[in-house]
Structure formats: structure tokens, C-alpha cells
Length: 143
Image (cartoon, rainbow, N blue to C red; front, side):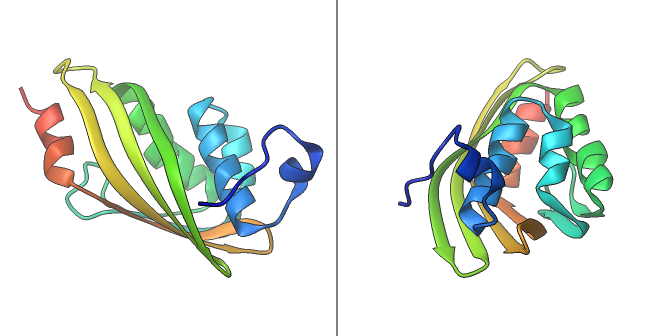
């Protein structure tokens, strides 16, 4: 596991792939969509896994936040991606994480493991792909 500095000017300006990805998670956790968009390349490709309720590939920072983050916030209470472990190889960052939330309609809690693969170039995320147990997500959404 790598040690990622938090709250420093160096971290906030770093183009290191793990730092860029960590800033994305922090922005998401705080609901700061502008800061999240700042971590994404203009031509980002963000892929939510087949079978996931938001399955598909989204492009542009605004496209990602409006089609993924804003929809998650509308449908789930306290949706959080907990980034637990980082594996870094050059521009590739794989994060082993957990999603936790409560579905607003069913009231069912969600706790599911997830792996995220990011590609970071020039200090921006250019590609994202999600891997998770979509059946557990759908179960929490079903009455």
C-alpha cells in the first residue's frame, strides 16, 4: 500500500497518478463535483460495469458527474466509495475499495467490494473502469 499525503499543497498540485485518483475519491466523498471534474481529462472515458444500474461509458467531466455521481446521489443516501488499497504501475492505478450506501426507495443498505482501474496521463484521469458485484447492488434496489 502506498502512503498518500493529505491536505498539503504538494498533494493538491501533484500529477502523480495515485495522487490524482485520491483527489477524485476525496472530492466524491465531499460531494464536490467541481473538484472531481478537475481530476478528469476533457476526453475521459468512464465505464460503469455491465449489470450495474448506471452501466455504460460516459465522456467529458460533466457527462461523468451528471450521469454517475448526480444520479447516485439522487437514488442513494450517503453513497461512498471507500478507497482502501492502491496498486500503481506507471499510469495505471487499481484501487480496491468498498461501496456503502442506503437505497432511498427500498431503505436497504449496501456494502459491496469493488475494484476500480484508472489510467492517468498528464495529471488527469483519462480512463476509468469499474468492477463490482452488480447482483448485490440490484438486490439493495429491489423491494
